[in-house]
Amino acid sequence: MVRLDTQGNLVWEQNISARLTTLTAIQFNGRHYIAAGTSRGEILVYNADGQRLWLRTLNKPITSLVAANLSGEPVLLAGTDSGTLVAYNADGQRLWTRNLDLAANRAILNISTAPAAPENEQSLLSVILSAPNRRSAPADVLLINQEGRTLEQYTAIDTTGLTRLVDINHDAQSEVLLARFATVELLGLGGGSSKIANEWNYSSLFAAPSAVLVYDFDQDGNDEILIGARRPFAPAG
Image (tube, rainbow, N blue to C red; front, side, top):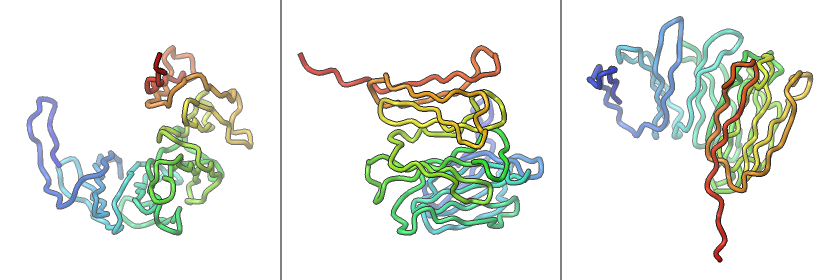
């Protein structure tokens, strides 16, 4: 792993004895760090100078790392190839561990966090969990709170890995943007969590969505959604 400056010059280099699978940035105690996951199940956290802060091992390949806040404190969340989700604090101590697949044959494909700090009974995370035995079938989407408890599960729904939590109308309440074949859908999470945002379903892509960008292009306080899709199959003749 290497860090380059804006001119492409080497700042520092770290030799890691495994394949890097994921990287993310995180702040602990006001300082910037880099977290790296490996194919051997290692989680390594380095400071801006390339000095290692701590190392933890989960013994399964790390598939996803993301920074989040639990009760106002920064945490590092790690997902594994066997469906385990772990939260670590700034000292590398485990806050909780959740086995999302008891058979340990489903991988966590992606973790995304809520744009706004949620209350405890609102979703903090959207976790995409692969089909059993990592088949190419649609994946499950789990919405998880700050304690690691699953609040809601959408079964066999995500075909693209693009599902995420959004705050489309900037009211500090999350909605879930579901992406599946030829369809993108916005769902409120109940309990008043979608005060202004209208739920909708757009199913005229005629192809699987391949990229999604959520951004307030016109700066009117409401996000717009840009969707890229794979070219649809054109029948012969």
